[in-house]
Image 1: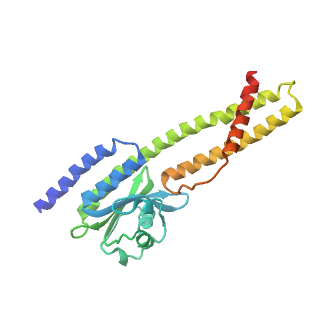
Image 2: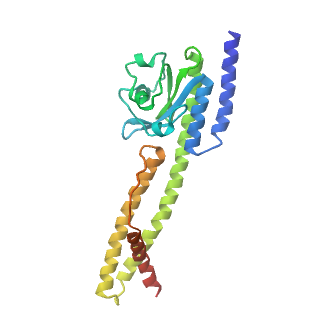
Length: 268
């Protein structure tokens, strides 16, 4: 009994150290790696993982995992219905099972994709401000079964992790917004110049048509820019993957020339 109490106190002391560690970074990937490593350590588990919840798509996706192939795991989708993680999100409750394959909620596609066998599992919801942001799981207790003490430690860590994840996301969003505003300046400046030139009575019909063409292109560019930043947000979350594409450098150069032509005309 005394040994169990000592282990419990050691676990909570470790949580204090982990809380300091989590507060030292706002980089989401670094933060998540620290959380899963700490979760596996304090529960003596073989592996840990974090699944983030997409409320719009109503699905979860793996963001980081220990002892598993990261490229394979990252972005792997888990449905809200028909999975243990989905049940945890929907019910906002902990799940502890010693035989995952015998649980009807077990989503076997993950194991088939990664090749990582799951025996026992302990998962807790990540909740902040009454909102579920994901699930923290540990897999395969190294000695014996997951205990009440393990569950309590993981719940405390999950509460710390949820707040840290939300703070990191807010920081990323503010950084992304600042970059988006910066990128908007060039097309907006071009549109401003183009509309100014349209008001000048001395421009020729050919110049007028060229300015209209430039306005059209810059409007399309603004739409593309907005879509690109939405895609970037999804990429940073790990929900989509990069795809290579070919483009014409000459076309890019001509487009840049057209954008800057209005500024050159205004400067004359």
